Figure 1 (tube, helix red, strand yellow):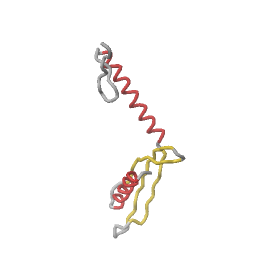
Figure 2 (cartoon, rainbow, N blue to C red):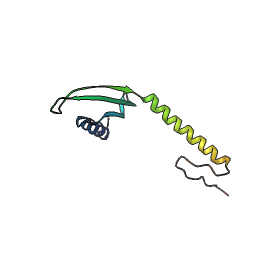
Figure 3 (tube, helix red, strand yellow):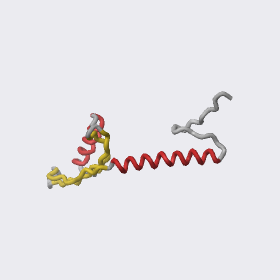
Figure 4 (cartoon, rainbow, N blue to C red):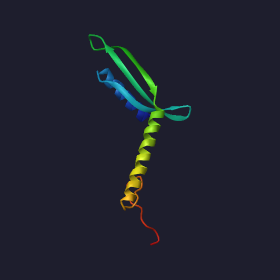
Length: 103
């Protein structure tokens, strides 16, 4: 995990220690591959507001993240196809129109 991601996870955990919900999604490196996980925990505090227990889970969500990315990609393709049926020029992923070359 990169320092930036550790900072994100650490910041969210510290916020949970202040009473905020802890339910995050982030990437991790496992076996040389980037994978996505969801972490959720509920913290229990004593009468002095000191965390005495944390119960939670880490769930692998790489498949879901990949499916979401594929769904976005297909929606973009459909949007581009719809644009062409309207007589407009196709757009790139960045939304720029393609220029005619050699005309």
